[in-house]
Image 1 (cartoon, rainbow, N blue to C red):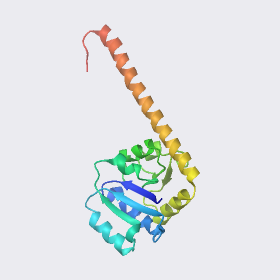
Image 2 (cartoon, rainbow, N blue to C red):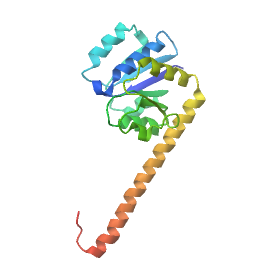
Image 3 (cartoon, helix red, strand yellow):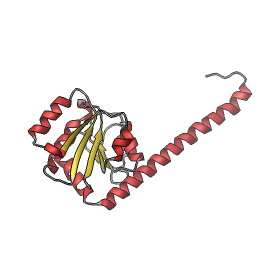
Image 4 (cartoon, helix red, strand yellow):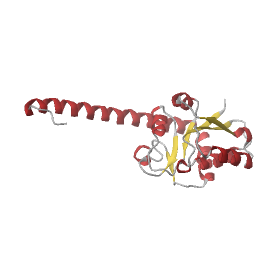
Length: 187
């Protein structure tokens, strides 16, 4: 089967879809790897021209916008999300929760979730696409590492969600106990 290196994001400059497109050049002409880019936006035309310029052909597929991210994620072997934006794309967390190995950028809150070499891999923002390509290559060559990192990512997401739920339940309990004694609820 073919390995799918995927990404879901709006095609806008701050999400840096260009690095993903350029990294696909590392795999040009390989039958066993395909890059799939889900999402739409103002950069689409330019990225498609770039893909033609780089001669990517069937190596890169533009999938368009999706209203079913989990189905798109389910097709992927690796989730590659270089970005220069500060926010953690929720889709990074979703990929981790599904046990995908994630490569993203060391920006904003991303390192809080993606611990380099443990629950995923981090590259510098604006990193050379060849560096990303090389990382993808070595990850593809090691199914064991893919599984190990993917499982660690899923475990981390489960733990974090559990903690968050515990926090919410604890807060609700606390409020119900103390609201009773204080009479009126002040919130």
